[in-house]
Length: 95
Length: 330
Ligand SMILES: [Fe+2]
Ligand SMILES: [Fe+2]
Ligand SMILES: [Fe+2]
Image (cartoon, rainbow over all chains, first blue to last red; front, side, top):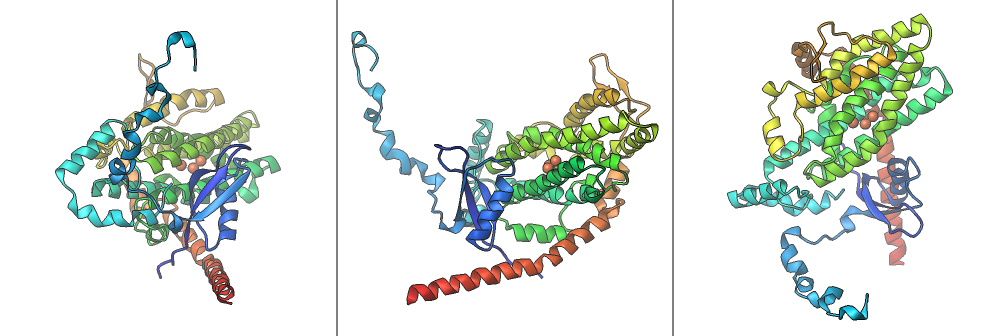
């Protein structure tokens, strides 16, 4: 008999105080509590984290990398959002 | 690692593979870009990686068996704690790798089922028995040593999820090799019987370990495209040679003799080993090694005995979900 599928979860870990939670991988678990325990056992065997988030993989909506041109075009054309766009005379010093 | 769920749209356009897309893909590889699970990739790239990553995952999991055999009989509490931690790591490696394989669209359950059905391969090395405690030292030193040699270049593999899993794995591997070498060192500094036990283990494991790097370059079926796709950065023979060169001085330090009387050192420092018995390798891969049947039987037993746990967890999750919907409706 084929083994029935167990839901997939994405795991995010905060490694140090002050840092953001970072995606570290995924795992299978039947519910959120078990996913947290499994994440601890699989991804933090050497004290790699202070806090863990688990998110059902099916809850993630991803942008399509094939459409990245269209997706990110609005920012690309706006070079005036960068400080180097503006000229400040050398005498004024670092700004 | 990304998700199986994100891959669903991808599988549909596999048939539309055209030359322009393939050329664009190869250009990305040549530019050392990493391929991610949502990116377009040739069906053969997907298939090659699914096979390679899942075989790697099965190897980590089956690899727990020969060492697990000695957990209850480790000579000291320190050794026992270390071996237990190592075997736990191997389980973790298997799980990282299944997750990486799943980003290509297969489910872990179907990959595991293929292994249990005997349809998927795992490393030939785990079909050899662990007869004495010295085998545990030898496995850490040589089997993990060979695995590291193989896995370090995989950290730069073109497929992002596999490369990232390998970085994590490599960080954990170095303790495996060091604890193994420490066991060997202790035995070699011990009584004559202990040293003889260490030599006996080296005699039995040396050749199977050299076979871990796969068939010689002249006979390898997968290498060409894998190299072109930057899945493989070094050939089997190149990695094997690096391993031999690194290992000979380690054996000399232990005062052990590599069981290859024909071995000589080149003018440029490389150690030339004798012909490997490829007939033995083929036999082991074909299922006729000393422990193939045992290994599959042990995996099937563990999987079957865990069925009630999976069922109970699924039933509990379903019950709670139902209760939550009922509460929300109130
Ligand atoms: Fe491993
Ligand atoms: Fe490994
Ligand atoms: Fe290992």
